[in-house]
Length: 214
Length: 214
DNA sequence: AGGGTGGATGACGATTTCGTCAGATCTGAG
DNA sequence: CTCAGATCTGACGAAATCGTCATCCACCCT
Image (cartoon, rainbow over all chains, first blue to last red):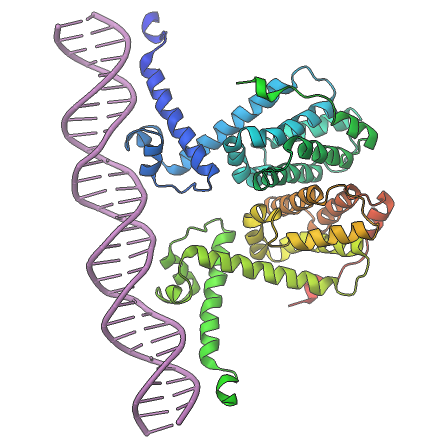
C-alpha cells in the first residue's frame, strides 16, 4: 500500500503536471499579449498539447486564466518573500518590495504583464499582491514608521503607482527601470509620511542582484 | 446652393447621428460591464437598432470601441473644462479636477468605468485625460507651485491614484466618495511638493455642485 | 407630386469556435 | 510480458458569430 500511494518520481503525475504547466504558461503568454480570449485550439497549439488536453484539466477558459493569474501571483509573491527575508524594518521591507517590483517589470515582462492586466481589479481586493502591500503599510504604521490616516486610501496610491509604473516601463523601454522604480518608491514613501531624507536614503541602498538568480 | 449645403435641422443626419449615438452608448455600457467582446448582434439589440446598422457606421468592433472611449473622454474632458473655468492657480486647477474626477466616478458610473477599463493603457500616453494632468503638473511646476523632479514619474502616481480611486469607489459603494477623493487629492498634492497645510486647505474648498447639472 | 438618395433592416451562407468522444499511447504493477 | 488505469489526441457535429446583400422606408429636392 505504502508503495502504491507513496509515489516515487511518479511519471504519470509528472506528465500531467507538465501538460498543465504548459497550458498555464501559454495562457500567461496570451494574457500578456492582451489576448485573453484566444481560441482554445490556438492556445493548446501554442502549448504544444492536444486540443482535448485542455478539457482534461480545465472546464472553461476562465478557469485556466484564473489559474494562470494565480500562478503568476504565487511566483511573484514567493520571489518577493525570498528577496526581503531577514529585513525587520517594515519601511525597509516595503521599499525593497516596491523597488524590486519595479525592476521585475523589466526582467520578467510576461509575468509582469499578467499582473498588470488584472492588477487594477485586484488592487483594492484581498487577492494578489494587495494583502502584502497592506500588511507592510499597517506594519509600518504600527511601528510608527509611516503616518497614514486611512490605510485603504494609502493603498490606492501604492497600488496605482505600482500599476502605472509597470505600464510606463512597458511603454518606454528606453527608460532606466531601476532609477524609475527607485524614484517612484521614494515618492510613495514620502507620501506615507517617511521623512524625505530617510526616504531618499532607503531608496538608494543596494538591492539583491536579480541577474544572478534563475 | 446655400440652402442645400447649409442643412437646416436635417432629419436624415439626425437619424444617422441618433443611430450612431445609440451604438456608442450601448458599447459604453458593455465596456463598463467588462464585456468589450460582446457579439455584434447582442450589441445592436441593446442599442435597439438593426443588425446591419452597425456595419453602416463601423468596420469592426474595435472601431466602435475606440469611438466609444473617445466619446467618453470628450465628455469627461469637456465637463472638467467647464467646471474649472476661471481658475488661474495651476494647483487649484489640478486639485479641483482631481477631486471632481473622484466624485464623477460615482455620479456617472458607466462613463467612469469606460475610462477605468482603458485608463491604464492611456495613463502614460498622450491620449485621454493624461495630457490634461500632465499640463496641470507642468504648469504648476513652472509657476513654482509644485516641485517635481520628473513630470513623467509624477504622472505615474497621479494616473495610478486616479485609476485606483475609481476602482476603490466602485468596489466599496459604502464609502463617502467625496471624502475619499479629497483625501487622495490631498495626498497627491503633498507628493507634488505642495506644503501640507496648503494642500489640506485647497482640498476643503467648496466645489461646484454636481447635482445641479444635467 | 414623385423620382432619387441615404439610411436601416434582418435573413442567409460562410466561417469560427466549442466541447465531446472513441481510440491511441504511455505507465506502473503483478 | 501482460493488463488495467490514467492521460493524451484530434476529428467531428453542434452552436455561435460574422459580414453581406437585397430590400424597404423615410426624407429631400426639384
